[in-house]
Length: 483
Image (tube, rainbow, N blue to C red; front, side, top):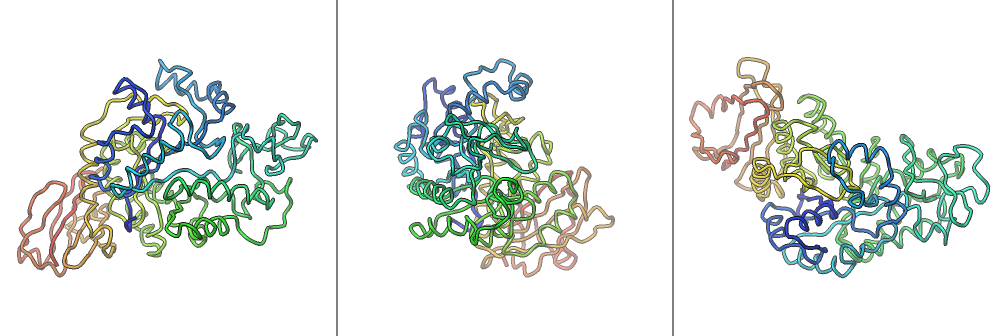
């Protein structure tokens, strides 16, 4: 996979249902149209993350279909929704086998081979913290899960359910939120539970080229202890689960890719355990809620950290970028993501211009494609697929004043590779911004602005004083020139 790869996230069930509605027949993973793969390749995607392929939990599906909050949300967004279009949460994994409704492991293997022929890698989910509430291990090996035996817990009773065999087992949980009542919490202080999950991970590694590890920080020793200390005690294991898990897979597949969903300032710690990329939620929050100076400060972090961060403005957990940011700002934020170092994640429905996020359990993605949004992303990603954005040297640039303070709203950086340079400037504000772009070592007489396709003469005055820019709110420019 290239340095600074482009990754496409696809909500598998919603995507296949959309194909079914368009073509009037059922689709499995083995039936994915060639046009989809060709388009993904043309847009420069190095990998496709198929979110939610694993065997569905019947219990989790029933819970989702009867969840009042989920139904209330759907009534607002999709008043004509049908209950049968609500599936189990993709993160309540019953078993690490591809669901039969998607064609099973065989259909996935067919798709993977087709992707490989085009140079596109396959990424899947690995959910380390928990399993589905009705997965076979809950009854066969309750000791793999945090439990109080057949005795009802004396505290936090709402954190537990009674299994069919009479064991009280904890629901999966993030310490800052209510329990996920369709899941069972693994006990990472039990070596047998660790081995069970490492075996699952080994199995997954046979089916794909990499995994996105859900809520990876919850399996860290100190986080696990602090979340569950009343039931597992305070003595930490000698080793971290992820150290063993990653090395176990890479013994057989040295190039296997590990991406961690991680928060709470634990990104660097997870990176040091061997993860290739970690979520950059800090950048997402600053792009959405903060100002250009704070964004620039974040981008000044250590370069290796930058290279191993995964940037995004949308994923299945976040609101659709068009709604979260607003139309023009979302495209500017997308341009930032596409031209920074690190992995660049784009969601399939984001590229199509879905106006609002639907629950991930809902499989009907019935919305009209926003063609200007789609066209912008196609152009942007094609530009960002140039070699300089993947093998070049990245650095932040300073923008000079052009008479007022609005230059502070302009973000800028550059990529250099051999005799080519790419300079990116983005007015990340809702006001017109003016600034002066200084370009050193330029050898030609013109700049090419990639997004508009226009050539700009490079005069002696500009060589001395720089290029004066007047940028509309959230306007982006990507300049290419020879050095």
